[in-house]
Amino acid sequence: MAHIAASTALDHVKVLDLTRVRSGPTCVRQLADWGADVIKVELPESIEPDGTLGAKRHTADFQNLQRNKRSLTLNLKEEEGRKLFLRLVEGADVVIENFRPDVKDKLGIGYEALKAVNPRIILGSISGFGQDGPYAKRPGFDQIAQGMGGLMSITGEPGRGPMRVGIPIADLTGGLFCAMGVLTALIEREKSGQGQWVQSSLLQAMAFMLDFQGARYLMEDEVPGQAGNDHPTSIPTGVFPTKDGHINIAAAGERIWVRLCEVMGAMEWSEDDRFNSSEKRSKNRHELNALIAERTKDRTSADWVKAFNDAGVPSGPIYDMAGMFADEQVQHLGIAEECETTCFGKTKMMSQPIRMSRTDSKLIVHPPEKGEHTDEILADLGLSADEISDLRDRQIV
View 1 (cartoon, rainbow, N blue to C red):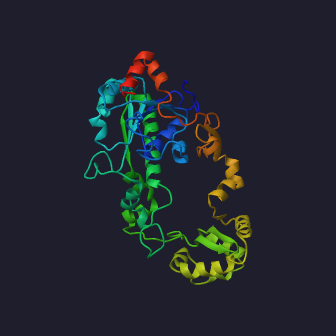
View 2: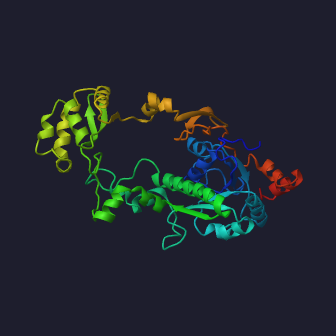
View 3: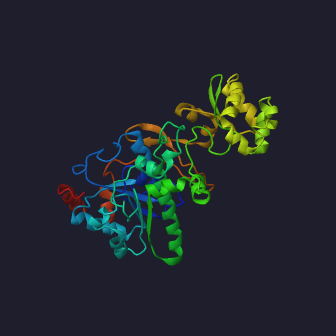
């Protein structure tokens, strides 16, 4: 099967995918879903059985990460395998990897080796802690980065100890930032004609994601703490009980605060000396939240969400997964897209959260079986069927 592009946006870009687990595949998915010709390079099954690193192939997790690409088995630990890989590099635009920093050089496929055969190549590398420095050789893992990146210190309820978030946010953002770097390098290459080495790490991504919380420390010397479901500074913003569940309310700023008071029939709050400025509302958040909760619990979530939004006060329900995917706006946006897989048949996956007017993305190619496209990819390099068969017998492919 020749390359079938998921979009025409990047259909001129060829990517060699050496990634595994999550951060690397998250990066590559951004390129594959926008049309790049992605070849996933994997060790033969006899050398690295399914599920050795990360999710097993026929699971929702793996399938969701690995769509819109082809698969080639290649043993990079053998010299013949390395040479075949470098032949692929000659015609490629991008290589993505998330090995430990020293592994690619041990395999003979570090940036300098790639650059020697293709000066235009862009290498995207994701690691736990960076390609150099005192922690460079440590194994990287999402929850470790959440802790070292400061996120767990500001997540959860005060006094309850550090808390991780419910998704692998360091993996995901590390991958997304690497994809942004690779796309930036592709654009820059149009001017310079040269490739470059793009690096991101879980620790860097996690620290960057602290955003205003990090800025509070760097610029105001304030160490933020845990705030539970409350916004750290803008009150009332948080979770409130209703007759049939809970809702989020976000009344940031004086104008929206007054609207909230109107909707709740409590205009006296806007004049109350405890709450008549944002600073006072933050200081007296527990008293204010208790007053709001006493009123919200008497009506249903749907009633309150409509009333607040009609008045210009941001509010929304709090869904589980089933509720989220059933929501009419979620369905309108096409966040779940139908696709075919070899193991689940016709199913749905998460689509790209970006819409483009001319070159939109589609889930058009099923996640490949291991080595599904090995013969055709090697044939494109000029190898005969007998040569490919010999390589397979010797566990090179």
